[in-house]
Image (cartoon, rainbow, N blue to C red; front, side, top):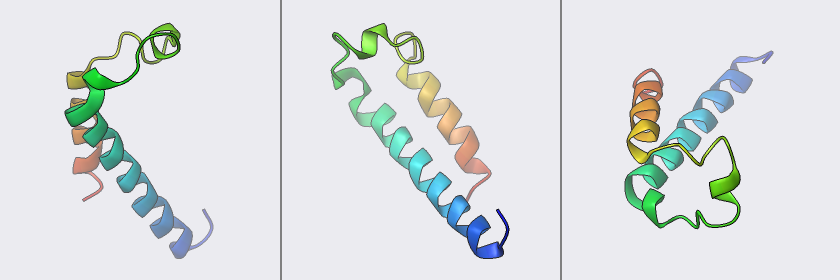
Length: 64
């Protein structure tokens, strides 16, 4: 980041993506298609909805 505009764009984009992930965890996590691909992905297969919600809530607290 070299400019204030770049920093602001990063801030807004990061906040938006965290909100999207939080909504996914809150409303749709258990309905995701875990069979085949997601259940084999080490980054997702053991991840629980509550963990994702807590982590995104923590991060968003600093971006409000």
